[in-house]
Length: 161
Image 1 (cartoon, rainbow, N blue to C red):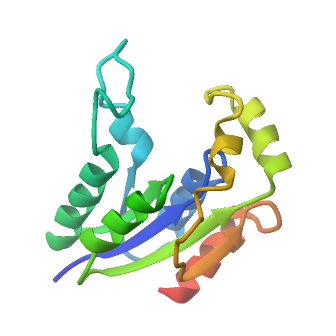
Image 2 (image 1 turned 45 degrees about the horizontal axis):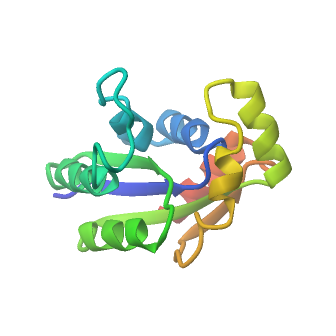
């Protein structure tokens, strides 16, 4: 039996990872967290993680998630769709799986504040993703991490599962 897949899509610093951890704590079944950041963390130190060095990293993530789901694992995916290609590849890869795609958003002003306070992101990354990350994506649910707490967002996601 295939596992379930929850996809959290939003800009950098939108609250995807915090929401994923809250879901892991609240869901009655065990869910693995598979994030794009984890895939980039696999790259060798000192080698730029750009598309020239590591092409198709988002597709590799999608194929890995499919393998996990097909072996019975439930998975939460923490990803940034920058362009229609990533979204299309993911939807095609997840065909036949029980998956839900969640829009994770908040205001640009809040994203910029979070970026600065985090200290581990390039300033301006969220702004560079802001206009493209949700373009052309069909969602099962929208959550706003500025107006709702991580717990409230998690409850909304659980409500659509």
